[in-house]
Structure formats: structure tokens, C-alpha cells
Length: 118
Image (cartoon, rainbow, N blue to C red; front, side, top):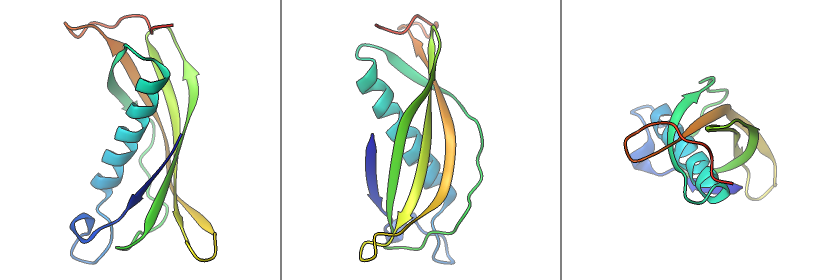
């Protein structure tokens, strides 16, 4: 799944660069949306992000591109790879700024792990 996000002034620190926490929030949200669309009826919670390493800075006004793909599936969990790029709208060039794997677990109403819906 592909999503985009415009980095606005409210997402920036006092140096004019993107706060990392916003990026992590968007990564988690877009991966969760993908998992929820792939497994209708499952209630997912985030179990883990495998790495958090910011490769490049991001300035205000940047359009970010998020590409989310299923990486692994277990009985009660599923993992997605998420790659985030900053793009040059005019030139079409893109730079990888962040990548991680996000793991979700399917739970019932009491918070217990349950099998993924088929």
C-alpha cells in the first residue's frame, strides 16, 4: 500500500526539521491501516518496530511517500515492512529516509491474542 504525507510546520522542531515521533506515528498508522484492510475483522495492536534509525533529515514542505508491504505472517501476528521516502516532485527522484518492520498482534475484546481472520 502506498500513502503520502505533507510535512507541515507543526511537525517541525525548533531547527526546522521533522520531529522523529511524528514519523513513527505515521509509520505505525499506515502499517495498521494496511493490516486492517488485509485482515478485516481483526483488532490489531502494535507489538514491535524492529529498528528506529533515521537516515536523512526532512524539512518542512517535504512530501513523504510510505510504502507498506506484508513481510511475514504467523498464527496471531503479521509483520509489515515500511519504507519511507522523501521525493522531489519536479524531478521524480526519491531518497530513502527511514525503514522498519512493524509487527501487529490480533486480539480479542479482553486483549488476548487470537488467530488471524482468514
